[in-house]
Image 1 (cartoon, helix red, strand yellow):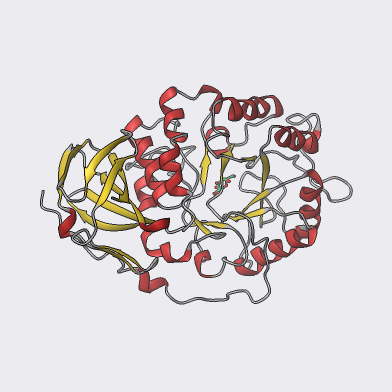
Image 2 (cartoon, protein in one colour):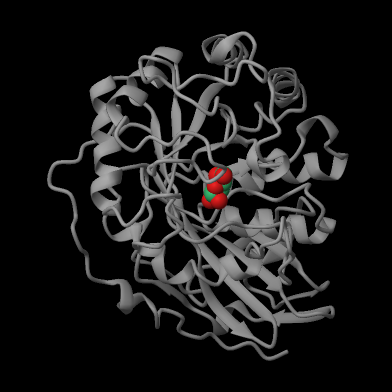
Length: 408
Ligand code: GLA
């Protein structure tokens, strides 16, 4: 295959203006200097969560090596509360699901050296119909702070036409006022272009609707169709310039271990790390296979995600089902991900010297006629020659090869 570079910034100009950037919003600036990493209950359990199940998950989080690999947050999604607030207007953890209350559960999470996250919604009700925060922003933020919450995911159902920028700024101020540093995760599915205005409001914002456990074809879940990995991937390239330390585009939580094939899980995880995405595992950690563990705890791939430069990858090349994504890293290193999104194996034959790479966002460039780089294959965990030679490899369908380039 003869590979030529393409320019893929065509959509970027569509998003180059800013609107409504907050003059007054402030946040805890020191948080999420690299994309947050954790686990969230939604993708596997939806609202079927309770204390015994979740304590088992916390225990496995530690024993499986997830914590050692850098995952820190344990986030309860929708379904943790009672259908009604108490007589003071406070939210209450569902006593059947959490007989010892939420403070006790948060203490349990903290006792394992993890941080605790929780979910609510800017509307009158959450997406699953539990009490939303609309009108209770300061009261809810105070309650979360008293429980020791470290992370708030804030959804967008039942918002009845309210102004998204103002709604999220209000919750930002409520968190600041409550005084406990919390990562603020905006979840309005990219509907109001949060990348244009949320940098000073939260640490991450969803860029699309919900993900499902499908690589390219969409699947039906509970009567609706979530997005596939590739659907979401195709919506990230044009907004990459808005992400950086402390403020990340969020292409949604991981579906690794939730039913896709091994190579699809591996490609999904690699691409999310290339995108400097928040890494929220969403599988049942207690039943994780060795292959799933190997993917989620691949420290070399995670290191791309957590690179301190905080630059998202861009699609450097796309032709006939082969894509090349490149991510500039600190110390003038580079990650290169060859993705085969076609339905058959393909052999790439890539002459680095024909492909100088320039990135307008990080303002870095790589000219392989001037400098030779060593190649390290991050999945096969082996050296793969240098950029002085043509790189040739057959890539199965829906699979990736990920290389880290370091100067010789
Ligand atoms: C929305 C969000 C999901 C999840 C559910 C909970 O769909 O996008 O991530 O939080 O709500 O009801």
